[in-house]
Image 1 (cartoon, rainbow, N blue to C red):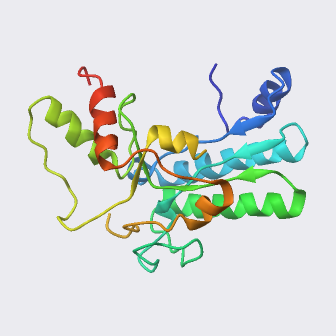
Image 2 (cartoon, one colour):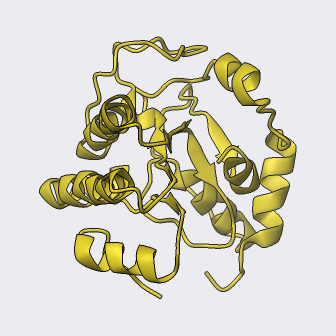
Length: 214
């Protein structure tokens, strides 16, 4: 089944017909690809979320999960052990849409009582699907090149560090201006978050699951 999140009427019909009570709303144009079509990025990322939240407000959905991103941080955010509350001077349309999405989720919760959850994900890495236009896609691309025995030139400066998470950890958890490391204390204390993948396991997971045909 396919669905356009911008089509609220069809979304409402599918939710009702299949008795869907929880919606995970990851549909978005990502940071790198989104800069080519900024207005389309805003429309999909923000209006699509509003449609889901509006249907939840009608009482048709009991819980909504809408992933945010560390792209929402900007050049004035604390770079190391980035806290929950810090300047959010996002610099791309994808990032701006994620900041707006966070505020919309808070608004629908505080104003209408919609049960909506959101996490600022770092770069999410996995080997089962091709890269989709995100800033951290280079991590997958360099491993693909290594498997083919090909050289790879990374666009990042040698000292740049970006936090990442392995796809299985992201499912469990429900570039230079990005934070180098995130303070996840609130997640650990609030709902017992603890990653299972360290750096070595992350690389091994991607290496083993990436199809050679890509």
